[in-house]
Amino acid sequence: MKKFLLTGFGPATTEENIQSFLSEFGPVVEVDILRDGNATALVAFVEMDIGDEQALHLTSRFNNFRHEGHRVNVWRVLH
Image (cartoon, rainbow, N blue to C red):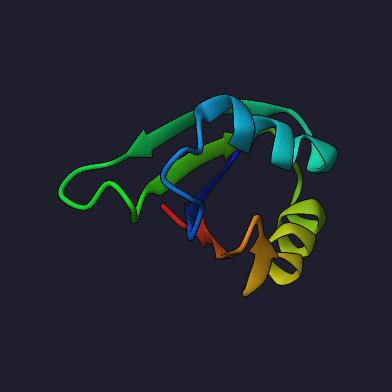
């Protein structure tokens, strides 16, 4: 299992939107969106059942990626 931190999605983004967005990389196990404080700057934590190569491809492809007019960034969370 790999965990990721995503920023930059618009305020109307749902867990289902993020799951659909990432599903091409592999199974999405869980999506948690934090909207504390500033609802326009949501942060999402995503857990996926993917390997190291897929995780590298995901993080390299989606840094500074434009999605619906917003700049999306993805970081792998190491624990």
